[in-house]
Length: 450
Image (cartoon, rainbow, N blue to C red; front, side, top):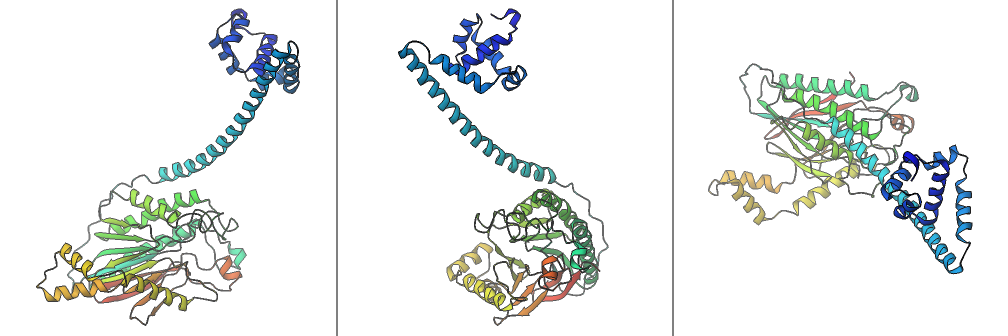
């Protein structure tokens, strides 16, 4: 046994050559060194062999070659056995290295995913409750209303350099923060204005997608105009947007948030994942968790790319709009066709039996004819308003079916693509309007930079 547990250089070299020729035969090696199997194994595993060989000017390839030559001397039968053993060891080493390489690649992917998850989760701790500010009671002179606030195409993570667009635009995280604060402030001021004549206790917020700008390899937007990676985009969005929602929650006793995702938030190239596997969808879920303690805030986050939002007696179909092709300007023809298609498939999904079942579930009195007719009218009507974003321009128009299309703008305004390629730039704005049981009552395009 090595004296006092100390191994000489020659003993270590001998052990390493035996390992090369016979593998991990600790018990067998122990007899040669008059030691124990665990002691030999412990010494072997704690030795940095690459450093040891380099330090003592030993050539690993030469040692393996010398080991092979020793194995080939002696009795032919014994030589064949040793050769087969050596071949098996070499095969095992190759397989082990290949398997380790695959494991390392897999671990690398998991590490990336876990870094994303850990960083985002750490950013969405539940926000503590804030006591609402007491506001004076108002004597209302008109019927109750609800407010609708559109939020879309904020593209957190996008960078628009003012110099590159001739001073006609500019965008980044500080710009978004300033515009989001201004939007919330003006929503509160407008609410106070209309509360002088109407009771407005509920705010409906429609998130229309493209909240984050997206990852570099998921679309044509790429890294040239992205100032943050997708992890930081989610981190900032999950911090900044809930701040504004909390401010609004002090003003409105009830807030209902309906969400659809956009195309910029997809996690890979188009068609590589299901549509809802989308960073916008993840962000909505994180915001829902972070605001869970606010009982007056409710989220509806479907996996489908559309949903119908109910506001009083009116229905709003929400989509992002990326599936509508655009060639020159706003594709109004494509938008009206899409609106008609949604109306057709939603109408075709209804039946008298389902309507009757829903009436029974809601306790609609069969003898209350006016109540029944109102319910039937609302049930059979697919939607009254068709809401979309995506095109970064504000607009409204009526349809042949009597509905109304409302198109929301963006937080950005002009960017490199719109200004330098299309020679167009819209004013950064978002829509905010009121609804009563008859429809829209007032409407604002809130400009975010002025």
